[in-house]
Image (cartoon, rainbow, N blue to C red; front, side, top):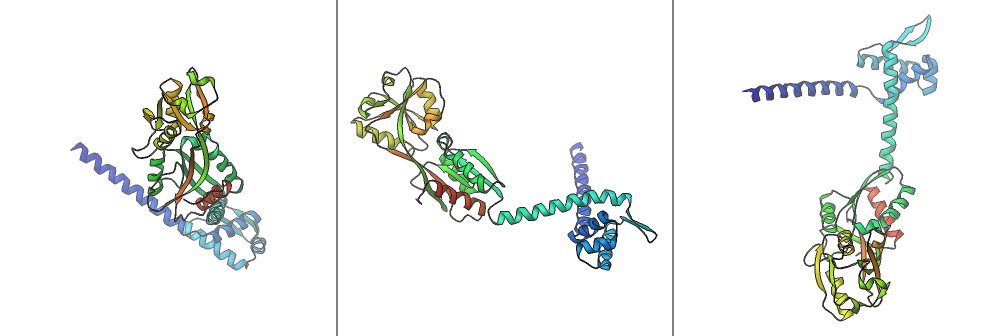
Length: 330
């Protein structure tokens, strides 16, 4: 069959490639750093005695190292003639450039490895909810962290709270900026990093949009838009608390997945959204924000991470976030 013929040829190609790769790896493993250093010293000095003095080794040992290197490679790198100065062969010139690059990579790898052990290098994947960005919390943390950890690469991922907690447990992210939950996955702990009041967001043509501050009872006849991640969690508790303060039972018109969706619906006149005050930083045409004078309910953002985190860089990031905002363990 034609499928079988193609499959067979395909695997033959793979086998050849693997053999070639293994052969290449075998050659590379025969070369050690000391051999490269010895060769480069002679290549630059073009004199065995001077190269030996530079490295602080015996000339005989230097010669032995280079001879072994040439034997391993199966090529002559240096022209040796007692009557003429040492010179590089064509192969030697080509090898010199690669040897310089190889040593630089090795030195870089050594440096990065040592920095990573101290939390000064590596990668940190940070998840965040929309208000974590709009409040400036995320950017403040990243800016402050970079001052002392500029070699650490940061990957930021917008993600709602439930998904972040799953990603933390699965190892897909290292740190999450999330809304508090009553229960967290096993091994996940949190620290409070922000507390803020709630505002009423509505279309700018709304009758209540004439005042920047309103009492809770003024919202008694309104339809509400609330982020609700699960039946028993989300901002339903905030809405219930608002009703208690204002003496009414809130009418929940829309449940959405995030505050941005709530604000977009509110700006279109679909209801009133109760949102954190930091969401005022989200630029949305046609939206108006009003403070609720007698509603003291506050919401929090927490920094979530694994309890037994092994990455020094991640531990440093969590520590910085805790210190910046005087967070407390939950």
